[in-house]
Length: 547
Image 1 (cartoon, rainbow, N blue to C red):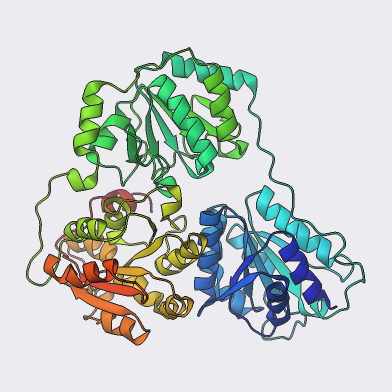
Image 2 (tube, rainbow, N blue to C red; image 1 turned 180 degrees about the vertical axis):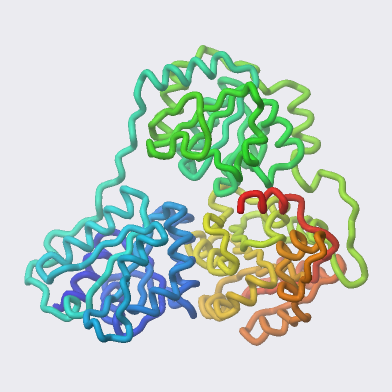
């Protein structure tokens, strides 16, 4: 057995059961060994798409995934997706072949690339240590919630593995939760008892059913309203005191209620500029508490009055045990409840429909699609001016229903995001929401959708431009020739990949979508929606403040 085969088999034994990538000569034997051991390999058409598919699969499934790439260009092609995963602390293992010869065309400093985008670098160094080093990379990705680049030198891959290389190999133990300090929990409990208008904001670190249940119980006891960061959207779906998303996407009522809080507690949430609208959602007299199992995250984005270093679920359960008996009213007044029932959702906020003969208002489009498409869905969203419309007008059933790869804010990740999430939740309808720029950047992965037989809906909010730049620079009179484009028939492009497709300019054009939704859905569907271009989305200026 060669080292490449031993490492592949060991990685599967360590818990890697889904691998995404593009196979070249350097990762051929390793990838085949993973497949032979029982892992599923998902071939993408571009390494950048493969990286984001792996990222989204890991986020949605809650288990580590792997990306397999060729040395040199295979890795550089994947770097944007790897950067997104690293910034999001996704437990992802990047398996990259590595050229040994200094004169090789494929030779680059792969370790430096990892460090440049915030990933952790590791390397297979010898035949004797290869399996142990591979298993340690899996453990590091899981326990430290890191994206780990494991370099596999070609000469080491080709060596003979020791006879006992695979004995024993087991998945790493589960990550031990961080137990909060008792004094910090006591301080948190005092703040909760003193509060009359508490708001909980749950983030990436709270995206588990156990954490959700613990937070709901604690919020019910203290009368807190429940919100999430964008990446945790859906965590409190269906709860009568949920505010949905806090931050730039928040509805006017949600923003008003968060600004009125006397206590904001961030649970596994960094309370960054996006989630707190550059601090404008925090009142001048509001107490801010942050709970996180990573001590370096506490106060990293803004000063907090109290930082609690601990696991979200454990901290919430301990605070609940210390709470007074019986539920407190807190922020849950009759007036607040009536307002939430009437006008929390963006679709309930009145607007002037700008749909004309040739273009449909993106709000009207999104509301109609929310009604047409099955509610059991998993939604992936690309980046751009349009992104707030699907993110806030299309409902999701829970936190597994929304995959938001926006830590790096790159255009072109949305389609691959939805593919990865769809593979993690095959029981749900995958919905990819893209702009025309991101759709054309990632069009090659339409082939992957069709080849995998995914019953996906791809919605293209097509304004024939990079809309964010148009609406940011256009009002100042700057020329826009560099960010506007002639019409492209994206529906025809999709048909070439084997999709059903429809062009939408008015609500009546959505009738074929209704037929598709009620049918067998055996072929993926692309909706080329020609959306209005009169002005930018409501959250755009807030977004540009963060550049």
